[in-house]
Figure 1 (cartoon, rainbow, N blue to C red):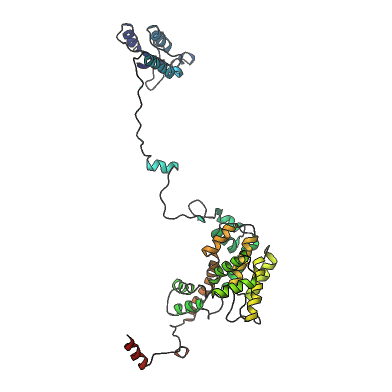
Figure 2: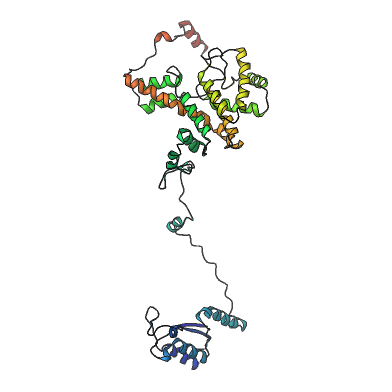
Length: 397
């Protein structure tokens, strides 16, 4: 078939109509001339990009459409019906066997333009990191989705910020204050402990603040400050498996493992650790439950009965009370608590807090102009092998 569209103005369409009348056009012709709305509009209105207009009655769209009908063309009632008439004629041709349905070829899939797809949000660039705790890409820095201005306006404090950036939660006020209490309590414990000692030695060797701080932090582990996670893990296991305090002590003894969070080199029953007392006092007054603390104190009664310095130390107290806090505040699921203990969150509290004291010791040494440290020889037991022992070893080899 032939599909034809014309417009008002001029007489070119009549050449097509004449050809149709003379039989020069043998295919079905579907024709429509646009501009049928011209009579209802003000005079001399121009249509289309060429500014078409009818100067005579013969040039109107209505006259041309009527002429097409009279000549035998298929003319719809309006432009809206044009596609329906094309379909009708096509179906008639198929029914007569003049035309055959054509199977459309499979259209090749053209990949979307990268820049357009990126702009529309359909794709994203591959990333190296994923961050779920903060976002500085917008107008205002966000901590776990919370505007930094709101953090300050609500006076969330360091404890609240740790809640957002570590746990991705807005913690209850008493929980945030507990975190701040922990940071203050563990900030320093004098120059003799291993972390402070290493930081001081590095500072005296002329190392910069960051290097000296790292030297001190690297000593944190199961024997110094790193027992918080271990204590939380072991006491949690004992309580969840419904061990009695006696069974727990016996179980750890059979394994040949010292109970994490129990024992202190200096402090004892007669010389209690004030830091532990302050933590327990706050917990009793503010936490909804101290069930695990009560259990740990029962364990302490058994261990101190054997030796006075086998007390619940500050590491153990922090780990146990943090478990009580998470279990009773309603902000954490059991799965989240398990993950927090597994990933080492709680040791992070000690590392963060103790960094304050380590930096203090480093700056103190620099301010004092301390020189390179050398350990006194009288404090070292030199135990060199004798000549006979050396000769004996040689004969063995």
